[in-house]
Amino acid sequence: LSDPVHHRVFTARPGITGPAQLVFRDEAEQLAGPEAERDYRERILPAKVRLDDEYLRDRSVWLDLRIMVRTVLAALH
Image (cartoon, rainbow, N blue to C red; front, top):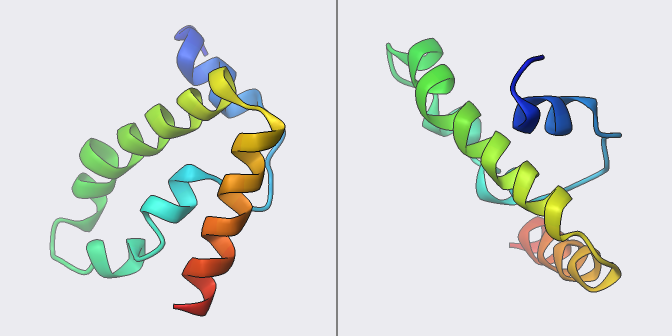
């Protein structure tokens, strides 16, 4: 991976949840159309990489707590 952003995101240790999972929790519905593969590649994946990169640059205990609370709320919704 020559792009430092992609390298940082794709080599990070995965977690249980994160900003990208919250934003795209209805990803399957967003990809229901005939152009699903192209839509994922051109719109969703770049947005997920950006969200994950922002998280990795700004991560903290407080941010993790906020994400966990938002995840629980999203699961209950």
